[in-house]
Image (cartoon, rainbow, N blue to C red):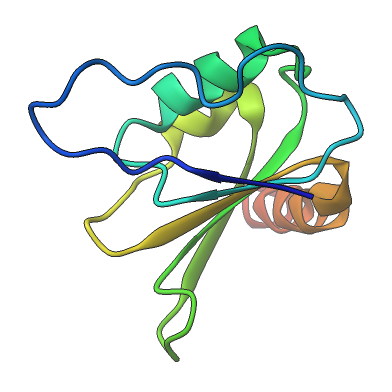
Length: 111
């Protein structure tokens, strides 16, 4: 498991890549407070070698009863809505089942 901090102060220098070098394809990554621009986070992780189809789960208000989670492929991460609440972004093949369940629900709703 690789744990990264994505949080940076407003008006700070541009954020460097989240992970310098190549990320192992089988890695499980947790990004604490990835920020509002999930497309930028996705681009950084893809540039570090993760496949665009890697499953992701964004969990907001993780420790609260009103916690919300959203799942997407890394390439589609920028389409998720974010909030100002603390978020944890989980990335890796370990979350394929969560994403598949979410995709099944969406397919069922559109039928």
